[in-house]
Length: 138
Image 1 (tube, rainbow, N blue to C red):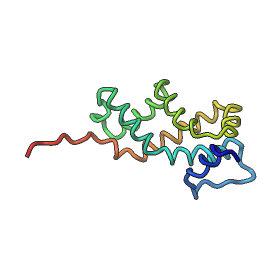
Image 2 (tube, rainbow, N blue to C red):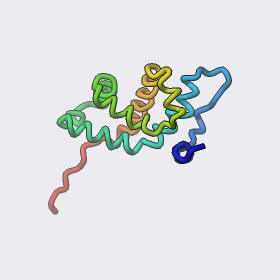
Image 3 (cartoon, rainbow, N blue to C red):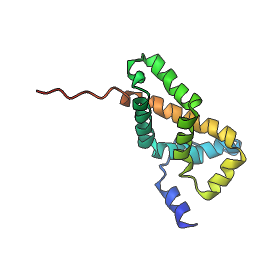
């Protein structure tokens, strides 16, 4: 095992709920063995990137209801191709060469799985996307 592959594999968190079965599809197996651990590892960066996205888009997000915020997250990930590609890069950049070879064989389906996981991760962190309090002079 080369040093990059070993290093990447060793820093990924284990996800106890991500089970592997004989009957599962290769896409589901890739999702549970590769996408979920990488997304969990990259959680803090994904949150920071989305906070920056909110700021770059005039902080409209902060004025929305919870339901509209969920829609905003979904729309950002599905419709803003520049943002979507940035998110994909954050995940793909931590693939091993072997994993990348698997990924390119079915990238369209795996991209859908990847973006769904990222969306769910951002939604689960929605409380972190509150307007930063402005410091008031005492």
